[in-house]
Length: 108
Image: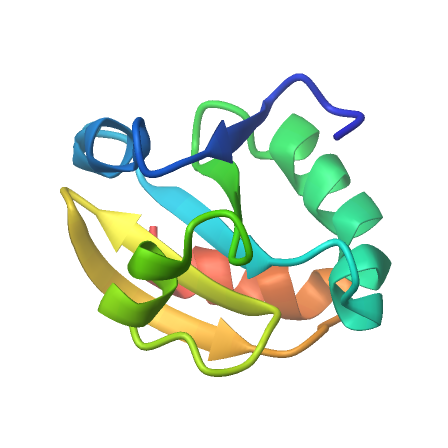
């Protein structure tokens, strides 16, 4: 990950990060996923531009399968927006930056 503002999520830190009082957009992804790699630069831009408004986290589904199953992630990339530890909204698929901005804007 190029941006130091993107949080690498794992089974060990996931619960603490989503319980934070700041919203977090979690990208459920995998290294082999082409669309996941396509949206990575967009997420890096958003992490910098929306710093203080929303946090961006990435969760590798291959390394954290139990969380993927818990949140019923059946295709990737899937994006879940958490507020106060709860899923506020979800969207799936590679989207342009404007779609992410709209998605975040309506939920934060």
